[in-house]
Image (cartoon, rainbow, N blue to C red; front, side, top):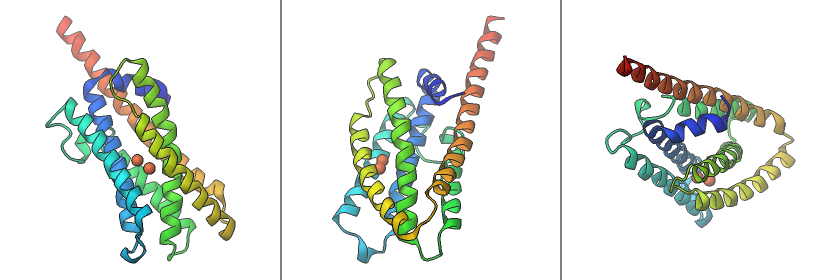
Length: 210
Ligand SMILES: [Fe+2]
Ligand SMILES: [Fe+2]
């Protein structure tokens, strides 16, 4: 299942859509946590605070939408309340460990910038498709403001990553492959869970008809 057809099926099913929105909330929260944890208090400036505040606001934006679809079903980020169980957590883990293997131990700042850059590139691509599908499906949810803010984050992170690659001569393609592989595993699980959920719904319908 490609991204578009899976997302289309998710949008059509309120339970899957709630799980998906809560998963996006979780991913945004992890983005916030990465910023907060990667910096020593002494180096936190207004720009970092602003970025962290926007990510946590995005997490709350998706959380509120998820809660509208199921007040008690998407309260926390435990596996059963996310689409694909622990797949989103694994996505972060795979990127964190892959990037750590390419960097030296004391590269906290570089790690934060490069991981955030990889994830922002993916977020822009998935959010753009998702936003278009929401519009086509006549849903009232719009990601326009989030896309504007992510676009700004991405511009800044691209600039900072390029500076790191220029300075260190690290292989840019190796970093891109880490995220690509992690996302493929993540999306495979999202598609599998979506398909299973829809299959269950179809089976249930057949049983009722009989
Ligand atoms: Fe965000
Ligand atoms: Fe962002």
